[in-house]
Image (tube, rainbow, N blue to C red; front, top):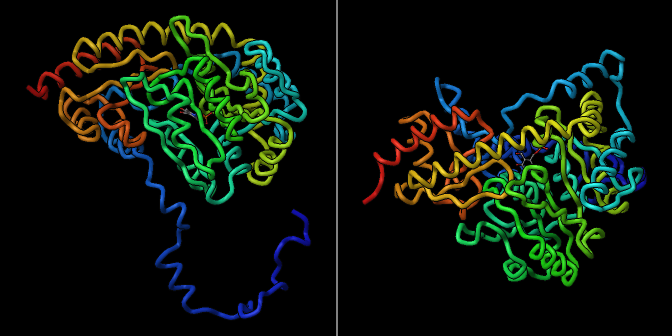
Length: 418
Ligand code: PLP
């Protein structure tokens, strides 16, 4: 924004003299200090449970959606080394070029999609920030964003905070929670600006087959829509499932903002490294928001991320193998005790049905916590279509998962409806 376009105190519209004291303004602040679009968004349904868990002992937590592994030693060392060498200043707003080069090379090598690291890659403070930037840089007030549901808790709030309107498209266990192009088409209106995809999905673990994603991309082309694609679980897929990077599909690259990061695959949640890739004009707009809001992602963490891209692949494979082992045992166990669960293709979540108990997902989660000390997240936290399910994260030690299953079995037997 240029100086001349900024409103200054000297530019006073007629009838609103500056400097005049308005007594009612003080009253208004006391009554109503929070912006409407922030008030509209309820607090995360997950947080309440963690407040309760923090007051209890011996709880098995299947609640938090993050790896139970510590960041691999050599990646931690790279962060520490960067501090010892005195790399404590800001980096380029885009992020270190060495890191952007690694990101571009990774995407080209793995998915065959090419981005220019100098103009089309932005390093962010996690996918969380990348998504916020993507939406804020592209959404005008009233624009609609289609979001398949159940969905990750931040998607709809991000759109609302940006002044847009989330339009939720329910998916169900019967379809493996995989959205279809037909469902999205039915939700399109002239106000639709974008589709927000998050596959493999949190909370369901579902992935969408390549041909269906290709149909969604074609639909986006027909309606001239943007696609935000959150692929944070891209590396965590099982049983030979091949992740499809949406931007690699024909016709997708020019309308897709690809979001990914280091949190899940390298067990680096606390380092806060994500990235966004998009055509230069879109990325430049995101960069503007990022530059004024954050300046750059943490420098030490960027050094650690370079090490992760260079030498972290064996760690990804080892963690993936362990998640796969737990997933098999845990999903089988849930189905055996009557908590029917579709087999998730990716991420590290089970999203079983709790219908057998006749409880709401909120009641189930609360009673399970108090009666058996197992923490899960009610499906309703991920939107109304998550009701009837709970989310259980199996990024938890194998023995803990076995114990959780024993407690769950006892709970289900006690509350099973005839
Ligand atoms: N997107 C999804 C689908 C997630 O599950 C999460 C974290 O749970 C995030 C984004 C946030 O990731 P980050 O740590 O990169 O901000």
